Length: 542
Image (cartoon, rainbow, N blue to C red; front, top):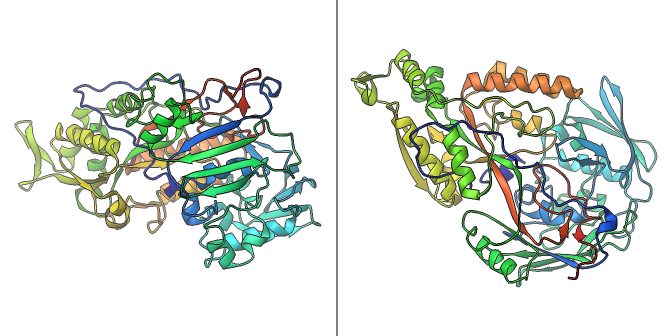
């Protein structure tokens, strides 16, 4: 699931700066949705939203679906037992569950009492049978499911009649809220064919306030209308229309009054300069990943020297300039600034002198304090491939190369085709350094662990694994208490910093141009939008 955010936005980049700048706390909120009470939102209207691409499949938990725009487009049509709040914490969503309770800690057992009014789009009740079938499908290798580690930890789903069940886990896991509700009805999980191929041209059955009424690939339009079988509070909007197009096309459409919302990136900022902007911290963060599996970077002193030479402050500043809003330094490999459990700490401060001392200790020395560092007459030269489709990543890579040159490390930045970047370079570890973006989701400790361990994890691109990093993650994942888990996550960050294989850089802001009359909608880092109250300010016309 983390791979969905690997490329992220067109993040990072900027001009070089000679001195380090200390990253400052920003004023960006975790969500910028222009909140309003339901009574202040009028009934009716169509919200037209621009988005970048058509989903490859409308199955939101298929490997191709989760890495596409499907989850975003389908969000008004799908719900679950818990609702994520602004800071990443959660609460039971009474539209879907009347109660969610841990009934045992050994083994971890969670009981879910379903809302008996809840139905799928066709009118069939949402029942324990849907949950049993959903978990079985997600654990079956024949299904092309984007399975988070927490699903693999489900040992059993025990139905208690039609409208209640217990989810029993093999071991304690803080990620359990992500594995207690079916994302699809049994009709789409009972067979491999239905799951893998049944939703390529149509949307899954809705259990939310809206349903997909039309999919028009020719015009790049997906229309959502009110779900007539919705049992919760009546949604405010008559319909939601997603328009698919390139950023510049969507920007022009917003300026022309044809869209209420359009994404803003570096490429279309000028077009939307006079628009009303909403900005939040994003859920993606740029990083520098180091291949510690071979060559000079197998030496921890060399890796730590690289981290000390990189000017994180400049990258944060350049990210801010690129998006036109303040960006944050990413000071954790697990939690966003502002997320529940996060405690702000200093990013790695640039220290050129200390970096050179570490290089010297590792046997890499400069003659006369200038030129490349040498060992046995050979310079320290590293490769940094970067996708040519992401100008922000290219700019960031070049900035990193300039920083490392100051301590005598030569870095060759190579622009490679974006389509083959992962397959040809990242996955086979054919690089010394690389940079792209990771995505943060609620309940993803198990996913983040895969960035570091085991050595053959499909997401571990560091060429290294250690018992220390594995133990630190295991302690955090096993903590069900929020305060103890937060302390354990701080220990993860200490161990990760000492290992020096992934260097967090900047949080990528989320910026949208949104009509000023729109309420309860906008960019969020983690929060679930309440689509029943999204709409237009009362007293305003379409």
